[in-house]
Structures are given as C-alpha cells and as structure tokens.
Amino acid sequence: MGATHTNPLKWLKLGLPLIPTAFLLAWTAAVSPYSKYGDDWAVLPALWTFPVAIVLHGYLVAVMRPRGDLLGYALAHLVVLFPIWLICVMKLAKDSF
Image (cartoon, rainbow, N blue to C red; front, side, top):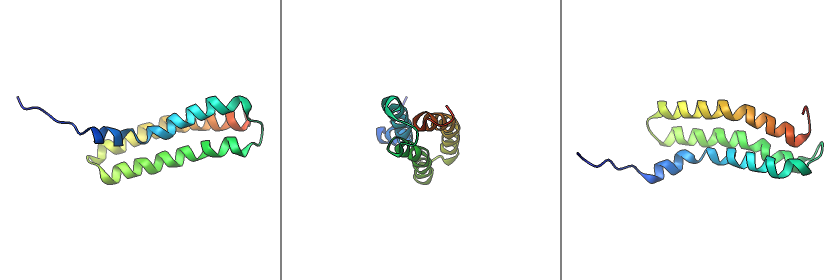
C-alpha cells in the first residue's frame, strides 16, 4: 500500500473562487444595514465579486487538470453564486427588495 500524497497548494488553489463568495456574504451582512438607495460605495464591491469568481475559475481551468472536473466545479459554483450575488446586490442597493 503506497501512500498517496496530495498537494496542499492544489487545495488552496481550488478554494480561490470561494474567496469572492465569502467576501460578498460578509460585505452584505456588514454594509446592508447602513446602505441607502443609490449608494455606489456599498454596491460596487459586491458587483465585482461575480466577474472575479468567473476569472478565478477560468484561471483554474487554464492551469490545472483534469479540466472536466474543474469545469463542473465552476459551473456548480457559478450557478449557486449567481442568485446569491443578485440577492446581495439588490439588498445593498435597496432596489427591488
């Protein structure tokens, strides 16, 4: 029985796209009570989280293998992130909520 080694750096890289998600949730929880309709300072950081998550997933697909698994991970994460992102942006903007 040979020992299997997992690269801890690989697991850190796989967690990169989750950082914008965590930031989005923390930002919304911290700022939403103080934001008012039209407050760009509250909305703009949240608006950037979804595109940043897409770019980070693209980076993972470009540099890591197997690509099929990474594409599945990206699709699953982005499908879950999109409604969360939309709700958070609306909550921060005080628009449609």
